Length: 116
Image (cartoon, rainbow, N blue to C red):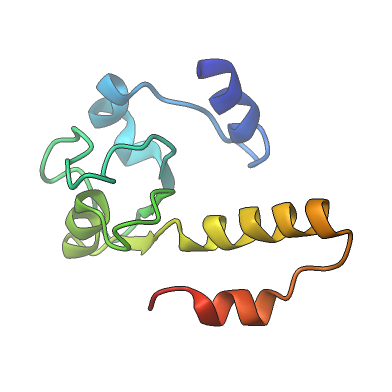
């Protein structure tokens, strides 16, 4: 949803949303690109052109399985710094644990249980 994406982007100073079909034209102006869609979970590529990424980019894919999505692989091969979605999964689980049990989540144990 565009409104949710805009609200999330507002947390970053100067953050903005860009439609996928406009990413190629604006990628040079971006420091961080976040994929917040499920594309990549089944091995499909987020439809971005080859050659879009550079060492100046951070690319975050909130997909957590596979750990390295085709998007992250392409960005990393181009020299961009990449972040997968496993951290998001961990912290979502911690919040759910705390809501359901009323006690702080055992983050170290939860982190140790995650796949490498």
